[in-house]
Image (cartoon, rainbow, N blue to C red):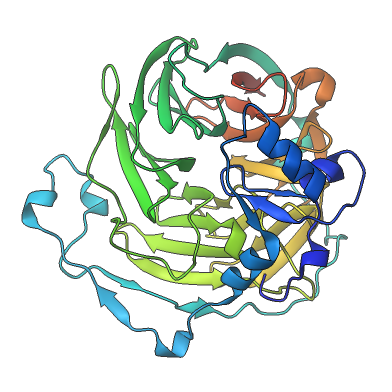
Length: 401
């Protein structure tokens, strides 16, 4: 991102209409790049008239002024005894020994990437080309008491429930598996992304450099503790998280506008930070979601402007890149990745090696413009829709067999 110039950033609404128009601003609330006409329209729209726009030149200057990692020092964070709740997940409890290393950068090894992957022999069971999706449920997450338009930035099926992240209303909404509304939990900061931890527990990330750990009880959501990463702990990156995934060993947190990834262990300690200014001989700009494999710890990131999926190791070494136009959300189940193509309004399947790419659902099947996707603990596929689409606020549930 540091080497990026304004001329390399394009207006997102115009690009979706097939026009390559230079962006002038970035919306702080929508995280969307806009040209001058679209900026004016954005501020006149009833939905976004109270949003805040940042000049792109100012944004790039801020994004590129990072600290010298050689001068960064480990910072110890203490925890008051009364903060350690007895019902907090024992494997994520912060202790006196908790240390977050600020500014620790991992060099990205330059590797030649080609769209032609070396083919391997896979079993019929692992071949995503055999899978089919059948819609079994669709429900709305909009509530009469919502003060703003519903903007879904994460959905998760866990513990016989569905949890939806509503960014604009700053809420986590709880539904049962039949799509019946149960309750809502309002958070202090805007929240983006959600990931399963274990049993009825899950984590979300948001402003204030915070990763919240929450759990589902009989009739609602409650916090197991203040957070995995407390609010007085700052990441080296300047901007908040845009995506999160927990693979049973690490929390992998995406910082889209810094083109960076923060990796935490189970105790909330920062293991490393990956800053990919340039990787694999070309520049990659991260999208809105992230996934970390539980077996290999490989990281899968949709690259929004480079139109494809990038796979790299936990150390930041690029392994492969598979071209797909305008990808957004990503999830995995039993060795198969499911990726949202927001431009073509479809879902793609591929193996963990980036092979055997095929469409699972097309625009005619979905009936709208998907943005996030997740396999629930019930094995079903949950799909949400873009805020600019007629199906915004809807969740579609598919059985994939």
